[in-house]
Length: 159
Image (tube, rainbow, N blue to C red; front, side):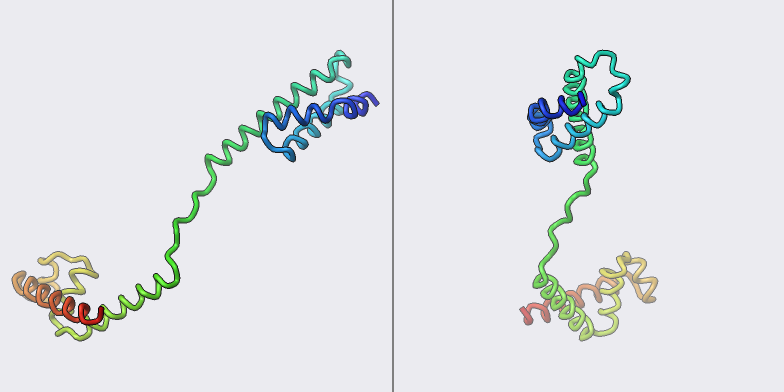
């Protein structure tokens, strides 16, 4: 009966106190409700029932602090937003560009195509390409340069 009387007399003022602390009405009401539930459970252990309002205020402040700590932790470890995804148009243009490059590569002589693919797709050094193709490093440089010039020429005509 005493908890009900405290509730009727002080609920709104305790909610206002909690709102000032947690800056959210719904959370403030929850905090105050939890404080009243805790008071009801601890009523028999309360030494001085006249200090029940002080107990409630302290409980509201402590629970509000807990809410704020929890929010800080949630914000700190919240997943980061996804980076801006390219548009569908961007993807379509990229696909067209890739297919144009592949078509241009197919038109190159075999040695130039091999040298370019090993260099730029396989990320091999000139020495590694020379070993893989069974040619000299000078020939790799020559095939790569000629292949790039031919690709550039074909792709400039497309754009």
